[in-house]
Image 1 (cartoon, rainbow, N blue to C red):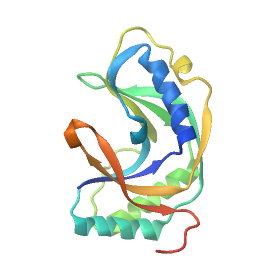
Image 2 (tube, rainbow, N blue to C red):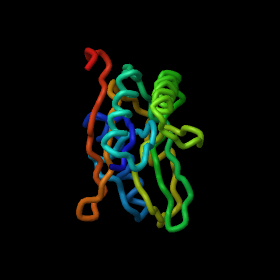
Image 3 (tube, helix red, strand yellow):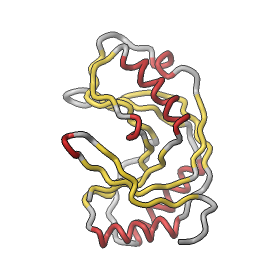
Length: 179
């Protein structure tokens, strides 16, 4: 199983992100993320056996989840050959950073090897993007917006029939009793 840990969003937040995506679509071609795939990756685990997935769940249980108040206040891209990856980014958030740091520490204690690159919290809205015109990132983003989240999810990434699909395997919610 190809697994990662993420924060998923409620429908209202997804609609706000999709509005940004629609504005980008007017100026670009690419592979735009499906609404059900919008998420904030906290840690990428890669190919993981069922036994190792249990270790990830233990790390999540030890970490727990906290209520987060998130502000989406930027849009940008990662340059790639073959088209860029466009994203909606988050304002600096100490609670999110603490949650991720604790989660990663618990994953490492369970024997996972995590990417060492700097954490850049974002939601991917499109891949392989080619702009058809100059864009004003501020206009595409519109006004910054806020969302709350209180769940960390273990997600499986698959491509049934060639369609990128993310499926929740397990979750830890703030305020939930111990499993």
